[in-house]
View 1 (spheres, rainbow, N blue to C red):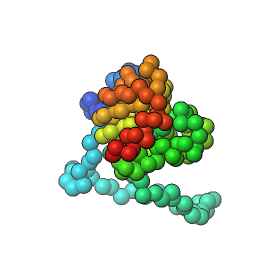
View 2: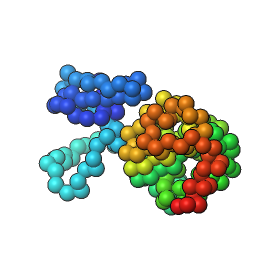
View 3: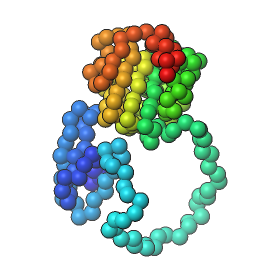
View 4: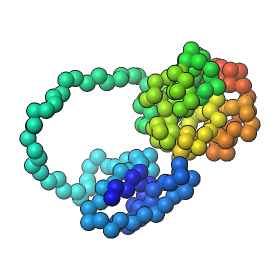
Length: 202
């Protein structure tokens, strides 16, 4: 059986993995001879480019059945850091109100910081940004050095995707927003006033 999204290796066949949207960590052990595992990349340090004791074995596979063929690939290109590797991420939520206001308030701040841009599922569902911006349980799992959440209330699914960030900064006018429970720094303010002022001071 597959063991998904492991956070650590505890033994030869035992691992930890998140359950209940990351609210609990389960230690699981497999009795299978061969292990099939997926790994949460943000939970592990980057592997060294040299050294290591792994062996490479050449294996033979089936020949081309001729049922399909590669046509082309279209890759999105951006000067902005990719979400899963960005050291700083600026994320916007539904409170921004529109795609135009998302662009007006979030993009200049991200440009000043050289940051990646993320969004809550609500902002993606509302059509403010493409779905590859989505951070959360059903989006991308990120753990940057700094995560700035703007107008994001902090639904459990979003928190599951970013709560391992080293420093979390939240701007929200609702002082009871769940995002403040995980934030290292919280500012209770109207984002339409606070974000331009922050961008200007940077």
